[in-house]
Image (cartoon, rainbow, N blue to C red; front, side, top):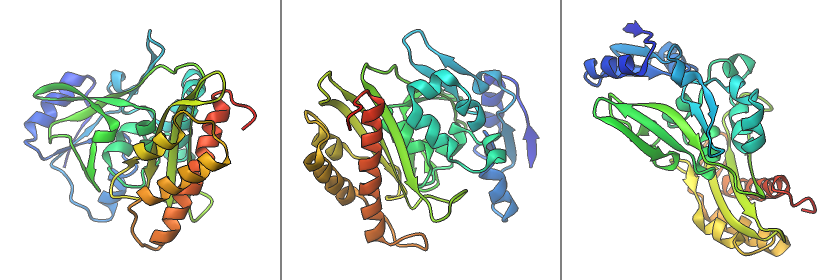
Length: 289
């Protein structure tokens, strides 16, 4: 296996193009290197992205949105005060991934392109309406995070493409987001279910915009527009939350495995979504929820 550590985007593109589909990028390595250790196929070329400055930056844009390099580690994301203030659900989701040591390497780009149904950061990014900038030998494209993962372990990226950065849009007034998950153990485990909620309220506490995304309860992270519709035009009272939980649970498509049954995952997803919605509403300024 040939290892390369390019220092600019053009070099990354050229290396991947030369590999004729047999190259892989390493944005952190916390999933990729672990698979190598268990005997998984090794690519002919491994391209380390950590030395490309553009992939290692967090920038607040003039419109109030944020650009996050695909190889920025979780620790740097958690330490960025502006990003944590604007998008606490996204930053907290990333912070849940692994140990302190893992946080020093793991990245949003790696978490997305690993394409796990249980990836913690992905539902939060989807609920936030995040897009990613993808670059390859045929040029550049912008793709919503919700459209990147096609099936477990498979993304929409061509063999010579890689994620350069993520864009989180500016926050509207009275907006908030949150992400919650349930894991079997207290630390460093894979989610039984996860739920991300992003919403905007008017001055009376009525929901005027919402997005809900779920993890670990379907083959790919799941956007649930029907659940968002339940909240639109309403205050988050007990009856609305009951209907919201029911729609979330009914939208799940989980499997039975050692971490939980189908019925259990359906139930937990609904409970987590309600809790995340109430946290997001409090963050949006609705203190009496």
